[in-house]
Image (cartoon, rainbow, N blue to C red; front, side, top):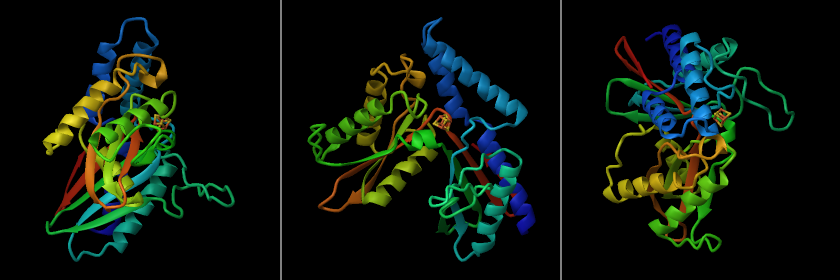
Length: 292
Ligand code: SF4
């Protein structure tokens, strides 16, 4: 595919990701709306969310004013050139910013100056992965700043939580993270957890769980059980949407694992807000398929 056509397709991927809600997230928000009592702040918050989803989809405007940091995973046929693809992604991001599908979100840490086009040191975040397949796959997420501030990394054992180096310790960390996020990070959230790895790979593992569909089931039965228990128990905290109280504090809990160093046991939590925007594009020959 020529670079200009690729850029046009990438622009459409960004538009879809920033202005439309993935179906599984919308279903969960509708379920949350049905669960809350009539006349409560929780019910009206869910109603505002559903109105916002409908409006942004219809008018093709950003689902939330913070279109987040742009995190990409790109799977490419082994041996392909990736520099032109990097350039096409950057051009598409600058164009999407110009069209207001993205808010300018890249600020120079020393001067405080906003680059104005979402490009800068470490922006966007691109992870390239070669594979044996012939097609290209682009997955992206818009990771908002408010929920990013609620991300946290625990080092077990943790005496404050009484959390040891086991899954019960992990359970305590996740409940603590959700408790600490109340009133921040725009609940109902999705705590995405990476157990193990080191400081950076653990958080990357956690972030990668955001790409999972809410209704998927962890192939590891023990982790599937833990995800379910955490989902139920987080929702007993009563924090509710936007922290106004209610029955829905989280939309789901997702857990991934990495082997750990003998000396380390990290529990990394990437907290995703209700505005869980993600998009996917597959290019096979000249055929382009989008989903989110
Ligand atoms: S945390 Fe999410 S919903 Fe809240 S302002 Fe940030 S991006 Fe928007």
